[in-house]
Length: 131
Image 1 (cartoon, rainbow, N blue to C red):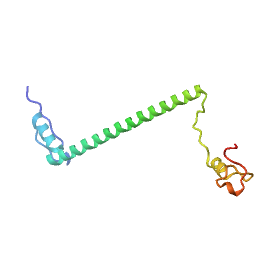
Image 2 (image 1 turned 135 degrees about the vertical axis):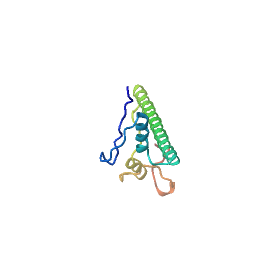
Image 3 (image 1 turned 135 degrees about the horizontal axis):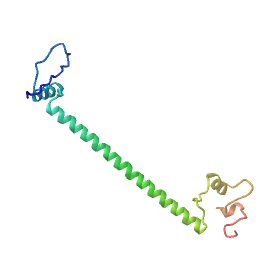
Image 4 (image 1 turned 180 degrees about the horizontal axis):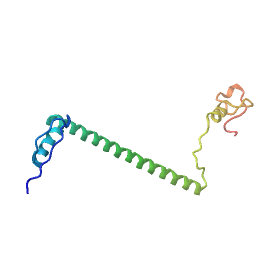
């Protein structure tokens, strides 16, 4: 039985016929024609850049996952604190006076003096001890 032969189609076109080749010759010719035209150093540089990019992506993904875990842990802790405050009957949200309320106590509402007088000689009747 004769050896089977293959023909490699050239990229230019089928107008130039090639001689019949063995399988090994056909593979070698195909590898030679389709081989990338870059040097080994250039290929190493490209591979190194690809590895660096992949390493950065995985590091960024790990940091995103760690931040998500920390956020979830914080939300769970805050929810637990809310439940505990609700059980104790305390206000769920933090109680902070608004700026208007603070100003009202410091300056007064205009109807009377809200604080004790700092100078007792100015005729102020109210005293901090009389409250």
